[in-house]
Amino acid sequence: MILEIERLSKSFGSVVVADGIDLAVEPGTALGIIGPNGAGKSSLFNLITGTVRADGGTIRLDSADITAAPAEARARAGIARSFQIPQPFANLTVFENLLVGATHAKSRSESDVTDRCGMVLEQTGLLPLANRPAGTLTLLERKRLELARALAAEPRLLLLDEIAGGLTERECNELVATINDVRATGVTIVWIEHVVHALLAVVGRLMVLNFGRKIADGEPRAVMNTREVREIYLGIEA
Image 1 (cartoon, rainbow, N blue to C red):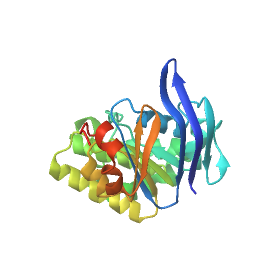
Image 2 (cartoon, rainbow, N blue to C red; image 1 turned 90 degrees about the horizontal axis):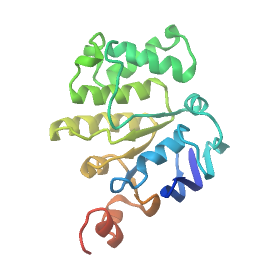
Image 3 (cartoon, helix red, strand yellow; image 1 turned 30 degrees about the horizontal axis):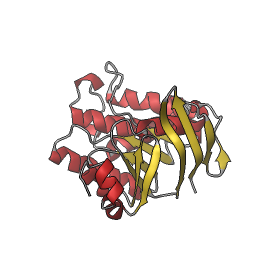
Image 4 (cartoon, one colour; image 1 turned 120 degrees about the vertical axis):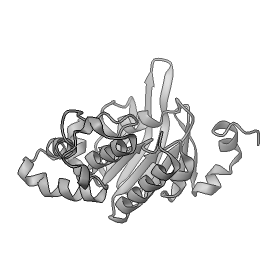
């Protein structure tokens, strides 16, 4: 397993964001995570990347215990993520944004990562915009840049946080095609998303969280049809 989580727990006062979560992800697969607002989805990513420390439980990457490892060590080990709200360095160019991510994630020089950044720009459809200031991009272009900055870090485990939110149907389809291309390269993907049809076009497995607790995990359409998911996530009386 590339990622193994056992009995992961985290609370902020009386608010429980991770309630004994168990999760195992095989290399090269794509896992989708859904759940209502406040379910603990983004908090799970924060725990995996090390920006928030767990109260209990274990996180392993390639069987190595990273539960107490700092965020920068996890990035160097191959974990990268996007964020719900893209916040690029607005005054830097698209290419320079990738350079920042690539050099800091792996502690490498700009000359060492230049070719990688160029490849990622082409992969994400941003090559024609390489010299454009990031602050001038459209929403779809900023979403692509958020994905590209994560890919520039050469991740083995890519965490995507609601990257399709706010896009039109056409833009969403374009983004899904790009993510499927990324998956085809062997990168393991864990994707949080409210745009469920986009998620189902990529992932082979679906997990549902509610109040920090895993309530379902399995084949995506089977999970979506379970009574508890329909009642809790979709708001439908089963």
